[in-house]
Image (cartoon, rainbow, N blue to C red):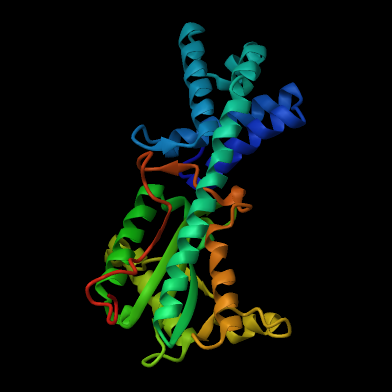
Length: 313
């Protein structure tokens, strides 16, 4: 029996179960064991108020059916109940599969819209400023604390971070533009790709700024854990501006971060192309399987036309 579970990994495991059932199939025994393990894990992270992706919603219907069967058969033994009703449970798991997959594919259409929105936003910024320092940071959690990070908590951490960016607090002083994308991976758990564009006249060291952003993320993610005697670190980051990482892109001149000059079109083009990774439609396996509401945004940028930006007509 589980005492805690990795929420994002559990949701991905549910999707994998249904995909596998449709495309390759399961031996009866294997399917029963997998369903028992997933149900026991999902009980611990399921939240009625969450808005789940289509295949997860399909699974919840089957889970509800199994609960009804447990009541009718007067048994709490999941293995026994599922085994006795496996034909019906198999059919229920995949009956809406093609409709659900089509709904997920619509995610690609939204990503295309996000790509064009980000391209326009970045083009405006690079045309407006003579030089901008581009910093990319991927914000995530240590793998051994991912079972402590619900999507609700991740959202709270992101709200605090976006507030700091908007207020230009501390390490975000001098930020002239930003973009973020929320994602979910089997290994990375919930994570955020963050793009920051700083005034090039005031900032030159992208890696140093990235380390400062990482420190801010660690501070935000510690939150209530600070009150513990030996608080376990939660947040960590991958800083794209690390020269050791960028060496592999130098021969092809495809770095895309660091100082970008308006009068060097190839530099601007490369920076925009690299930044569009945040919205690549082919990263379908990284999409969020859960949101706090159907309308919750998983991608966003700053505003180009604001009262503080000089030189706008």
